[in-house]
Image 1: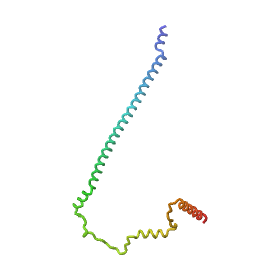
Image 2: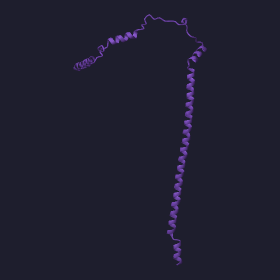
Image 3: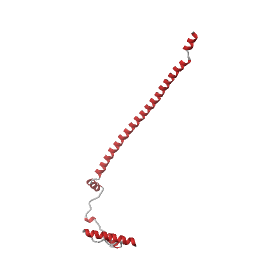
Length: 156
């Protein structure tokens, strides 16, 4: 009887079951610790990124404010009384009739663009536009003439 009791007390299966449960518990705790540390590292990285973004937004707003101040300062330099005063400071003065000299060119034609346009209109292959007739019959006649010209051009 003592031998059976001894074998029953120190049975291998009993220790094996307890050691498996202990190993699973230790492994579960290790996995939870690893997952927890990964989560904390991600949260810390997210917080750092958000802080950097907030700093960049604050810097952008500061630069925008400086830009608006510079635009206002440039606008104040462009007002006419200030430009006039600055011109007087550096030695300019308003021009009088005695200061103005006119140059006359014998071959210059001030109407040259009008003449060039008229010559181009004469050389155009398009027929001259007919007079505008504001009646329905006139509009219908012009549409009929246009259709007839298209058929004539198609036959050529």
